Length: 77
Image (cartoon, rainbow, N blue to C red; front, side, top):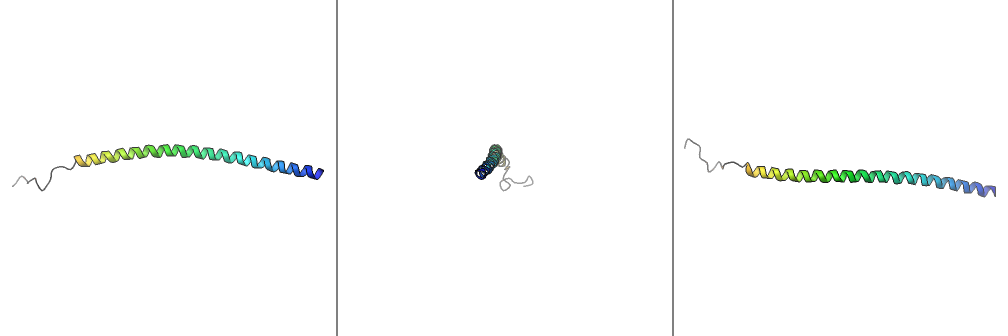
């Protein structure tokens, strides 16, 4: 009977250790999930900013084309 009690106590101890490890892993997964969500928000914000900058650069390139050198004659002609 003492052997069964000892075996039961060992199993309970191991189960407690497994539960403890599982709790730590769940906590770590939650922290990683939060970090991933924050990074996703940052990436979305940066992506939107990059698109706006790209549009602005495109608009500036169209505005900054300047006069056509082939059609404009130099003043000495």
